[in-house]
Length: 400
Image 1 (cartoon, rainbow, N blue to C red):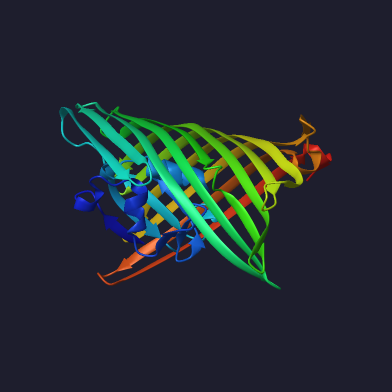
Image 2 (cartoon, rainbow, N blue to C red):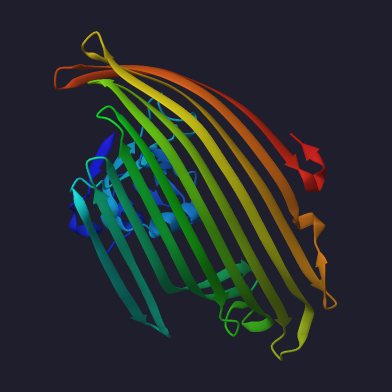
């Protein structure tokens, strides 16, 4: 794996976790917000635990995380048997900073940005971090709010052929509000026993609206306007998540320890969209019936897992790792599409869908590693996983 030590890097000041991650070798982000490693999909972990997020939700979480709270980034292009099989495409593990100074200390930072374009776009963010460490406990609290206005303009010209030219204009304004918090508490029961609790939370509210006066398409036939489409789009996205971890580590002796983890995550994702399309000729007369529709999508996800990991040095020079894991995820999806017909809202059953999914995974692994001098090392392992999944497509009365 490649390890980027960014704890003291100047570039993390004023940056978020996504900005820092983009500077890592082989990392890129596609237009849908998916994080790629060497062009392939990758799992993102935080402090050795899966984030269980992808796409726009993961992008929002990382954008709302202060880059100065990151200690290092581990890029694992070929994960060992210790990691979930779902991460075989690669794993990025973001490790946050730990507090080693005794007593109470903390920091606060904030920033404000503004961009005078066709209108005045503003943004502000801040991070409050408090730490307290004693002989028996280590506690840290982090809170980061973020407010951001932005815009996106897209202009296209398509030559359809036979004298037909389609010119498209889309002008979007976005408003994004994020709140993230993290509470970590470690209790040192003895010199060999540590109990830890981690609670993470994230809230995102985002809205996007078009400039209805200019957004739409113009269809020309040999330079003559034959149809003008004006489109109004309103999107609202809400994302709420809270996750908790309870962990226990017992050190038998040097290079021999066992770690137990219990995790739970709750994710509530909602998306609402409305679109109005009006069609007219060059004189402003209506050419066809307006297309007006709206949709709402709600997704509830519950993920829980139990994991045990054991490591020990055997035969004085071989490191052995072994462990087992059980995880369950339950997802409820509800998508409703409504079309406006003669002034009334009618549910479009063909484009609506209700789907529930449950997945149980049991896994176990063992691996051995040996270092030959300062240059060569060998590591081998095996992992077994069994997955039981049930998909219930309620809209189609189908169970898989």
